[in-house]
Length: 316
Image (tube, rainbow, N blue to C red; front, side):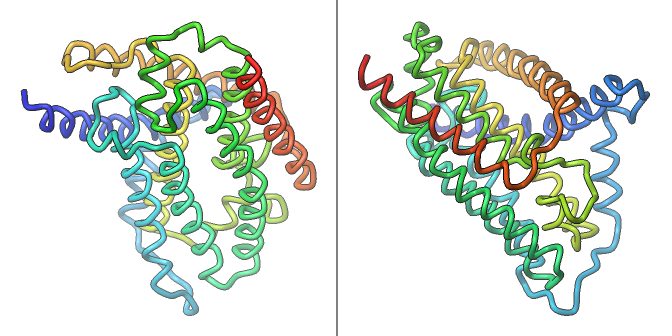
């Protein structure tokens, strides 16, 4: 098969993989939390049912809202799809993998985050503005840690290109357990939990106006707009976990033009995602949300870990 056609097919498969698995993983996390709290809980397919219901509902909007109200959800999901296309999720041979620079990926995802903040401000409500302000404050603390983590991971591979980093780790598996690599991955995980609005930084299930961050920004969204926002939220979290898994445990990813390896990679990634989702759900069940003024301390710790990773890599 032509290489370009093969790469294009892989990119389409990756989009479909994340699109179908992301709501399912959210349902699994909710189910695991319910079981851990000795409740039956909803079906693991409940997120699909909720999205279908929202797509059928009418979209209501504030009289003070502008074109941003409609454009923001589309920008969110479009930015996520672009990152899926250029990231090595199931294979290192995806389309435009030469564009899969980690700094480019961070910038594109940041566009989506900015669109959510603008969505919260656009309705002109107090809670939307509060949520956007808090989200941007957290981003200002998490971005330095994220950038330094990328620098630490790129030092080993001598490249900031994500497919190259993953391919290099495949050929040098001893690097995966090096102190620098482990420190960078831990820092990256903390940043992902902050950017995705998960416990201990934010509680995605809360509806207490004075404590919520992400939910405050989408409080005025409804119907199709809310469905797109929720879907992009599920997809972004799943995408970020996939990237971390391939940076830390790249074993099984398709590094050649083999359909068999692609199928195996898809199965292994699905199993790893289910396992990680279960661990995340159990972790969130046993942990409480941090006070807002303690979040900068957590992200400062992530920055210190990322800096130590860079120093360790340079020294060794």
